[in-house]
Image 1: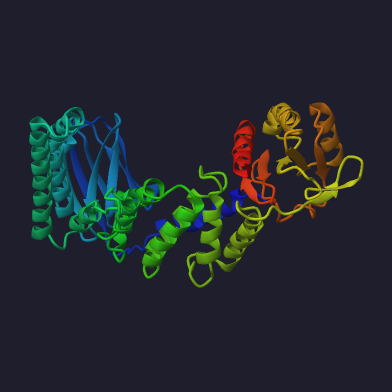
Image 2: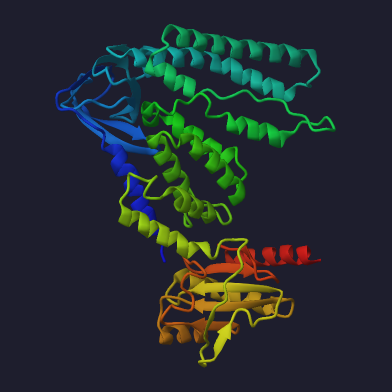
Length: 473
């Protein structure tokens, strides 16, 4: 019942197919660079696809800082970073037709000195960055001033007016670039990175409706991204927006995350490359061992069930998809808000013991493995919490997994567990009921035997007890 293997399959399906760019042996690439101040060595050319970086190629640098990168196959359009000796680096933005490029720069100041022939997009990229970097010191200074000044003061109004002026100048500069080079890859790239304006929404009482404001902003975040343009997936712009969309602009609760995911995935569905990237990224982010969201795996389950079908997930095989769907079916029964399944299995005396026979308002279901170091480390604390709360409305039900009868009973004696413990060597009593990825795994069931907490550490139990008892009152 481990999630690592299906997740690994998911990763391979995403990266391997994404990295396997179509290449034509009839094309060629020649990038020549003269970098002043770099010692002899090797440059690694790092490309990206979605959120994955990869080594696209390498070239030898001579003692003068000169190197030539030659390829029989072209570099796909995207942003590439050249890693140089001495922890130096520079980036270029290439379109598909920019395969013969010459670069000259000083390693002490790539931004200010880099000159390029054969790549209009790299040239505009550096021109724009120079303009924006020149504005940064004053914009940062104004931002600090505005924090300290009274909002109604003349000084605040003056600083705000100057800030607005600089922002307007930046917008005018970009608008000029977009107008001058409407078909350039840089224009698509930079335009996609622009964020929407915040719109004002008021509640009936006149106060700002911040929730509606954020939802509106989030829903418009993708308006400037052309999902038909796969070149953008080989730049940081898409993954940076996706991380912000999911992690900053969406409430970190499964219901909110699922709603935001469906909104985005349905927009991307007609565009296979984006559909594939979004579903893979969001699913992998919310795997059991990776998510920090309480019951974040509900998002993972939702994505696999709804989008990893043979009809939609055409990049993967039927067998792999079947494994993933089987995996989430094992997880689904123990998602938060679901009725905690009953387990009936023998205790050390051979007597059959059931979770549902317990009458306490709260039940802790503990899944543990006697060989697990964390289980051994937490055992004394778990037993102490049980003894402290057993007369205050909390009972415990321990389930040993992946062990033997002898090891289980030795563990109980060694660590002095006095609460109900069961073990089913056939695994039939617990299969498909309480999903366990990393032991110890702790679930809490309320008086209705609904799962109200999971993936807990031992030191979090008492906080949940107190919260649930407050709800009962």
